[in-house]
Length: 294
Image (cartoon, rainbow, N blue to C red; front, side, top):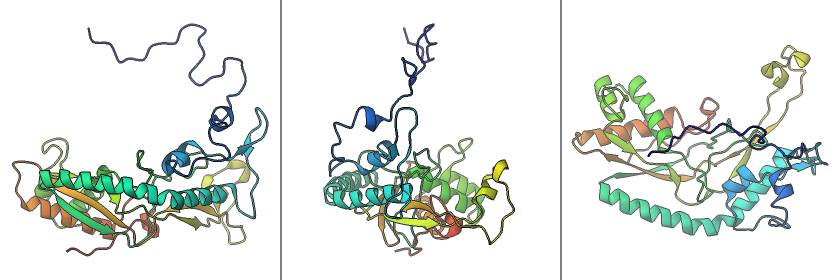
């Protein structure tokens, strides 16, 4: 008999998931369980992405009154934390390079078997992704979980290429829907997109924005004020992949579709990444790639 996937109701009197059974506030993981594992600090070969997402060691204080640590050497908590991540990524780079190279070798064998078209891309501007994701410091970032390197999922590439094909490329709508799909009449499309990975582990950089009217944009009633040039900027730091970083991806054709679809999809992808950009803050110039087509 097939077991139902519906979640079970909690037993009467059972604690809620994540709740403390003694009525006390749950401690941060690294304070309660990992402090004996990561002493004095995480190992030099630790996965950068997992450290960034799961081990934000930024809290201090006693039980029930945790707060971000005090700034150090004129740096904000976020800036200091990001600097540690950049330093760790640089140190673990040679170790990850071997693993990433093995991934590229496996992907090339797969692409050869599929008759896929390998595509090399180079960033023309810094790349930032995942800022809206949940994070201890409201500074999310998209990582490959196994390697801890920044990457872009295939769905992101297909989405930006499809938008370009339908709205700006001049491609006939029927052809665009056949190539990129509509999930109704045309299905998933004739061309399959693969994820975008850096050719080698990139050296991350810290970038900064200086919004002057933070309270105004947040619309906090108690702090609501008209925007003006007399207000002080509030620096916001975040991670980026620097311009000049090379990436690899591929496209392959589903059986039964015209071979010209592959070339059309590549052209739309390259033009979209050059003109629209990928990931976040494209209107501010981030995430744009070089437009050259071999």
